[in-house]
Length: 297
Image (cartoon, rainbow, N blue to C red; front, top):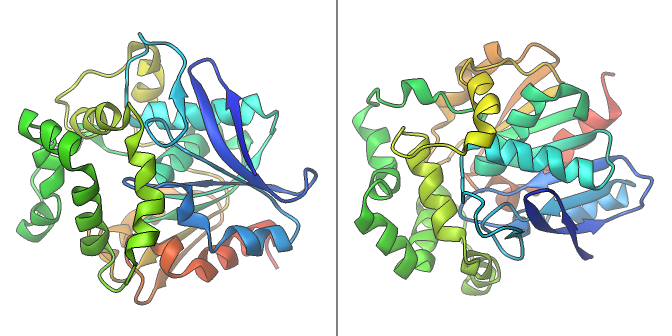
């Protein structure tokens, strides 16, 4: 069921399914995608009695800024604050979170900053909080090659290219990042409609420039950003999933992330799956959430 809710900054569009009194589970999509990431996850969780919510992030689909003058920030503090505000607006005291990419970043930020709001975390890709102070260090050539779009978006040519070719860019990245996933045109087009949001380009460009210190942050969010700069630990129960064939974040990247998690922690490498793991192997996400909801055995 589609609904909207307003925070101080956004009108957030979201899908909600399942009983109102079920354990709340918030599913957070990545870039460039939308809540259809979770189509294979939602029915299974609803069948187990969960209340499942899947919002469109800022700059996607029906989610809109309330004020013209609000910075179209895509920084990590904005994503985390939006998630906190979403929970507040719906009077959800605490919830289980699952996300990857931008959504995984929002979930990790919320878990680190406001752990009392998070019952458990499924973080696809590992510790997703950016280490912006280290953004100037170069990576191996193969990884720099994978990040071509990041460097493209640092330029005005990249901004213009995203404005004109957002579908072409997204489709290419889907193929590169999940090389074993054979999605069809209909699957892509259903999600690509979310990229028509009037702020998609501005939020995207700001996100990739801010993380490389090429764009200022929203001053309102600076206190959160300063705390994130310390790479805070995540204390809530966490299961990390990582697709063995992830074409942008190689599986070995999350192998050393355990030190960032101080509570119950498990890391599971999912064979064959790529970056869009929740679409390719939804059962792995369902099982991880089930394990968190049921708690230690």
